[in-house]
Picture: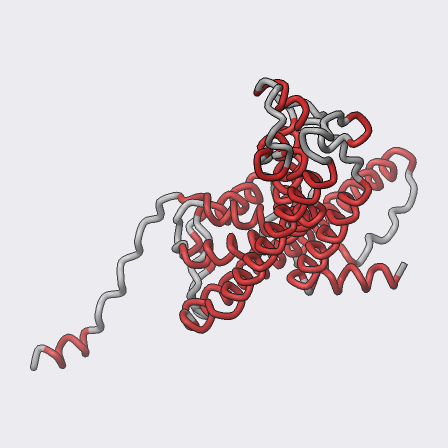
Length: 338
């Protein structure tokens, strides 16, 4: 159990590496899923194109959305984008950096699926078999069939067992032609994705180094701040629950003592330690106000060691400004020349 806890803590502390590993696993899973997928072309003129393009494009869209679902930063980005301005300004560059990072990771599995599908060639063969140039590849003298019948015959090219148009165009010639085009498109897609990944990962920091470093820093800050806030809330909830339960049992002990005249037992000593962690927030309404205040007006990112704790502006309520202290009489006399 301790080993699993250590692994979980390591993954939680290295979230970027963890998400990259998740995306890599999804990419391998998408390739394995396609290899296990039983591709059955309908071999009908009206449905071949829809089925072929659907297998080519719909699973990548699902994998892309799944990459966002598995990314923990989606809720953090939405929260940072939708939160009120409050006492902390929102930087659009940081939001763009967070969104681009999530898109880059979510695109890995769909890119692998599209690459594997195009290199295999079954989808393109099924989708565009009715668009074959029969005059160039088949029997140009075979002109006795109407256009609709020709499309019906060509639509059966992916279904070798029911294909009956060998005199029009050989099945092997049509399949090789379409698979060659599909593989060419697949390698072009792989080259395009590799080039885009190189440009995004390598050239972007070179041209916007200062903006890139600033966006990455504040992105890490938002992530760490959220984790620490959740940990602090969990610790506060644990201490609050401990104090409430101990007070309940202490009250029950007093009631039992008054009823049955039993000697009271010594109260546990950790009640004071738990109450020290509550930081003065010891009731339902105050805790709700604190949580709303964190969302509406997060404290500004400017540390004031001597600032009072009441400067958070809880719940966005208006607080009267205090008047500055009156100047001392000696200072007034000195500056006025008296």
